[in-house]
Length: 194
Image (cartoon, rainbow, N blue to C red; front, side, top):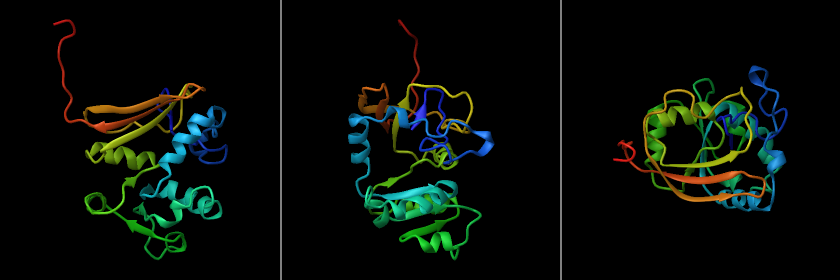
């Protein structure tokens, strides 16, 4: 979930992520409709999850109490990328199927292993690390028709040049452009009109 200017911070609610004085939490709510909900429900199919520490902390406090909405989140393996947490941390041990990983090599090992799809939700800094290291196979973007000017941004630091192909897209009644892109090799250049 991003804005036209690439902000991904605090989409779910006013208290979700107020770091840096961010005051627009919950900016997704006005765009909820049947089409949006149907697509999100499809994305909640069983998977494994790679989450940054901050997103994991938010999720671990919320989803175990709301698993009726997203049952798969309890069963999927949640890989937590953190240099600060320890394997014995109650946060990690307290949420079923949570596994701590601490470096890029661990991420590559998980990504290349057999098993369900590995999804990343939120986790802006982690997504930037994955983009910088060419570890993103697919982007599912929900581009909301607003700009916020400040806040954490998706494509902020170290994204490598990479081409993506649009695989499917929908525009909701509220104007949210929902797109699924697959990695499509290197960037190609040329001259317009040649």
